Image (cartoon, rainbow, N blue to C red; front, side, top):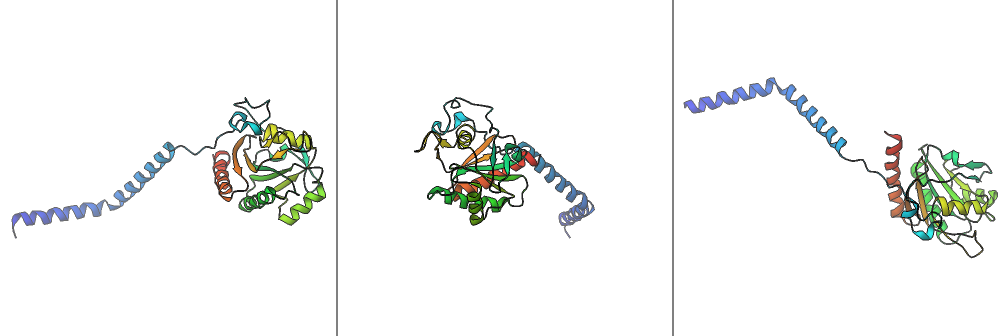
Length: 239
């Protein structure tokens, strides 16, 4: 056998012996290295954050003139209304929760039925999640009495534990729409508190800040809302 060939065989045997001897060490070292690299990547990759909406960022037609200049510190105001079960609901019920709000009325023949169907999609997605709630404010509380809201809730499949349909003082609801949620144009056809509401779903965080607007008649927009709910959950409940 040529000397060079014998030398090559010896070298191969030495290499096999080396890898056999340190196989476990090399495996553990590789796994640990990959794990550390993964942790560094996670630490250096910024976590997605949703914007915090201020009145100055929203279409001025939907914002009360007293707030159109506001660029920071906007929060949803206190409220006290009545739900479909005749129970008083205040802002405190939503403390420490993420919630989705909209403004509808039960006799609406146009966008409201579509919005309610899309909100039912959200309800189904969050039905077992105690951190997320749904709220619908009636823009015609003189029509949407407690019995009317209850009838509507039963017909549509509203879960009372996850979704409040609210009625009460019309002026107070209008003020919430214009000055808190920023989702209503100035006037409707029946007076200063007959609001023209929009199709918006409003995403609100546990600190009462608006974190997103979504077209409640568009399934793609509602699908984005569901994704953003996950983002907001990570921000508030997984850190």
